[in-house]
Structure formats: structure tokens, C-alpha cells
Image (cartoon, rainbow, N blue to C red; front, side, top):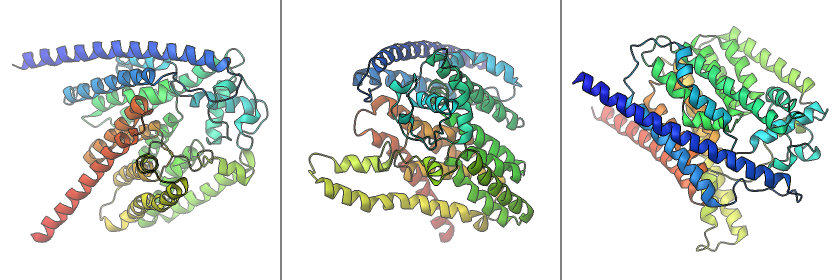
Length: 478
């Protein structure tokens, strides 16, 4: 019976692997065709207007279906192999070698989004002596100008800019080379992230499964390698931060957060959580050192890269302004725009201004609760802190990010990998990241897509909350 089960499991894995390889090749080919047609149109576009990535909804939906298929195969594979490899000691090199096909396909596939063009363009600005934090992208013309959607000042920190400059140095040969140099950087960081997870889980029976699952995750490969979003570096920061916290290295944790802020602004929300934890633990020397280091870093960045208030404001992404995307705010906007309701623009704006702080309120409450949690939980450890950093990030995306893009949530999987025992956070993060990224590429062009992105995760959080309330009632009743 055992041998029969092993045979059936192997057979299923072979079928899943074959299906994943075929779908990956098809998706890679689709992206190559899309890249060629988009590049030809962009290069011949003399109007300066934004060109849609896809000429028709059908083209984007077809690619979305292929991407959805890969995620379904991945989830089925996770379920089938959840108890496999627990006792085997597999080296990281072997894991890397066995996953090399999917890593290579992710690297070869051309980006479906245009953010990477903006990254390299900012690098070219710096190479030409133009500060991208003060001067908008539109003030400089490069070989990538035809491909830019956003033409504002840079919203990415000075450390990100270093990688942009390295990639931009190769644009002189050909723009595609500059893009693939940045993609190579993202691939190497994804491998580094997986290696750090593998090292940190050295004593866990789930080490092999979690490492493999993280390395070949369709979401991570597609968002952080194929589309080469800067969020791969934020994943590195999150992993490093959690490792520092679990090793009680609070100074290194503080420096890590600031390095993350100088990549993308998100990590700054984690710093107060660390400071409050240090206060609760009465680690006054570490707290004082962390504050001093923070002041020094701010001053150094002011002198070197961000010399004006406007330059610092650029990191807050002022370009999106009152725009909404993929969020509860976007869902509210779509409801107000229903033709059946026939609301006037002024009334729509009034209703939106009323509901906007109401949507934000749950995040503020959750942040305050998590911030003070060390004082209410007797055995509040660094592991609790790392999980709560993940929760706060997820709640931020859900309630406090009017302009939400699907790749933001990919960073949550780093926290999942290092806290696989936290069932609620693991399930909620996987549901949120999967539904949001699949919805973005599958049905973004259809207005109700925000429901698919937001509602499942919101329903799951409410389910957890309801269970907690019922548990408390049973305790009181007994």
C-alpha cells in the first residue's frame, strides 16, 4: 500500500510538473509576442500619450488565465507534497538545481508591467547628473522615454537608485540589456532571499518544503523576477529584519529598517513597533543607539541624496494623489460611478471624502493595538513581533493604500516562510497575495475586479475575529 501511494504521488507530481512546464513556456511566448508588439508601437508613438500594454482585453485575459493555471498547479502541488521531504536533508544547491527551469523561464520572460522601464530611466537621469528626486522623469529624454507611464519624480529611495544606475549603464549598448541586467539583479536577490530562509529554518522539519515552495512560487517569480519589481528587495529587508529580531540583534534590525526605507518607504511603519518593543523590554541602551543611528542616517541621506523637502516628499508617491486602484477605496469609487445610481460628480466626491477616513480607521486601530500589544501579552517574543509586522503590513495594504498594486503583497510571503506555524497569518497572506495578483492580470480591465481582490481577505479576517469573540464568550461562560 505504501509503495502504491508513493507511485501515485510520483505520478501526480510528474503530471503537475509537465503541466507547469508547458504553461510556463506558453506564458513566456505570450510575453515575448506582447513585448515585441508593445515595443514597436511605443517606438513609433510620437504623441507622447500612454499606450496600453495590450491592444485588447482578450489578450490580457488569456495571459491572466495562463497565470491562474500556474497558481492552481502550484497550490495542488503544495497540498500533495505537504508532508514530503520532512526527514530528508536536501542541500540548497540541489534545491536550486531542481528549480532552475522555472527560475530561467521567469528571467527570460519579458516584463508585463512598465515599472522596470521607469527604474532604468531614473538610473539614466542620475548618470547624466540629474537628481530624479527633484526632477520629474518627463524632464529627461532617454531611449526608454517612449515606454514610460509615470513621469513624476522618483518614489524609490537612494539605495534603489544604486541598482537603477547599474542597470542604466548598459542601456548605451541596447535598452533591453539594461532591463535584463536589472532582472538579473532581481533574480539573484530572489535566490538570496530563499537561501536566507533555508538557513534560518535549518532546525525546522518544514525547511525543505518551505524553501522549495518559496523558490518556485508563481507569485514571487512573476512579480519579483519576470516583472522585476523593486519589492524583491523589500522581501530581502523583511527576511533580514526577522532574522535580526529572532537573534536579538536590535541595532542591526533598526539599520535594516532604514535600509528598507531607502529602498521603498513601506518599512518605516515597522520602526515604531521595534521601538515600543525595546521600551517594554527596558533595553534602554539598544533604544538609545537605535535612535542615534536613525538621526545619523536621516542627516546623511539629507546631505547626499535628498537635499530638499520636495525630495523627501517624492518618496511618498505624490503622483498617485487622489487616484485609487485595487483597493476598498477603488471599490467605493466604482460603486459611486454606477450609471444606475446616477450620482453627480460633486456628490460622489462628498461621499468619498466621508467614507475615506472610515476605511482608514481599521488600520489606525489595528496599528495602535499591535503597537501596544507587548504591554497586554505576557510572553510577547520576537517571533510575535515578526508576525505582527506581517499583519500590520497586510492591514496597511488592505485598508490604508488607496493606490494598491498586486505585487505589493508579494513581500508578505517572506514573513509566511519564516513563520509557517502561524496558521492564521499564513492562510490570510496566501489568500490575499494570490487573489490580488491573479485578479490584477486576469480581470483588471473589468470594473468589479476589486471585489475579487479585497472581499475574500476581508471575509477571512472577519472570520478569524468572529472565532476570537466566540472563544472569549466560552471562557467567560465557563
